[in-house]
View 1 (cartoon, rainbow, N blue to C red):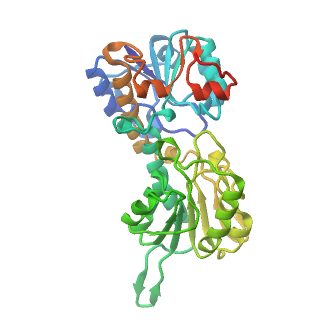
View 2 (view 1 turned 30 degrees about the vertical axis):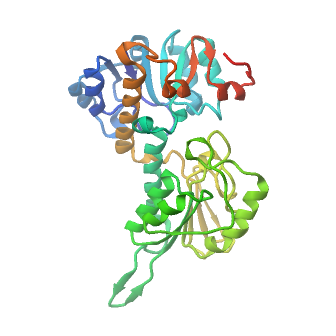
View 3 (view 1 turned 30 degrees about the horizontal axis):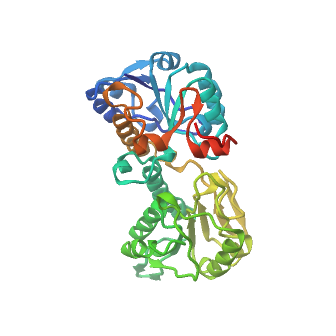
Length: 384
């Protein structure tokens, strides 16, 4: 089976779906690997590294025409403009594997199905033990959590650690992390390593132990929410979020840095911080909103911009893992390689259609949109 890796076309995307180190594992399993020339350059992987690993270089059109499977970081709905161009290069019975934003942008899934293009959306991987090595959301969120703290540290007009000097003692910065998922936990760990005093909050009571194990204080609010499937917080109603914001206001006000990470798969991010809360913070304080791409957890957030409001910097970084493309690509490559080795055993796709990992990620197959949640978003409520 030939797998092809084209250069990413999403604006600002510097990652690549396969790092050179991942090529050898696929080759050993019987895959031939085609790489578009220059695909890994922005991530720090020169063409020669791919050739040394056993891949073959090709121009973009050849990668699409010769490959049975196309591996991408951003495909279909996760790359709306680029998908239009890719669609013209794809052919019937070809398979695309990558992140696709299938629940928020389901139309490209329908377009792929109408052309009989098969598609696996990696965001839909079930959060089960045997899928951990394939979990692209966790690997990339981990890096985003790390980078969010560095962004905050650079923007904050203070240092993070306590420092005792001949000129006096400098007090440590106070960092508040909202959301203790993968990104939030990594943000906690990174802020602690930099010497900050760290607090964190999550609506899931089960996260308290994880937060405290990293040395942070868990903020107790008289609110709880049930977990949805996969360990995510379930979306709540407007009244819940309003009460949450009211109770959290004093913690935000006393923080030098607030990092928000709350997200609900396939939905707009919940608003957790309103303008009035921001105005109670000290001038020079920083908010880093990691949910900016989903609309943001702060009602002042503008994706891709930094808004200054009453002297507070509200940062809305987008595609954060792409700012660390070398390691982000390494992790993504391990995830997608593990996925391919699982779903394409013996050179056939899918090897086991009833397998949970295969079933939950397969969104288009044999001319049909097959994933129930995607079908529902498209108004196709009848089962395939």
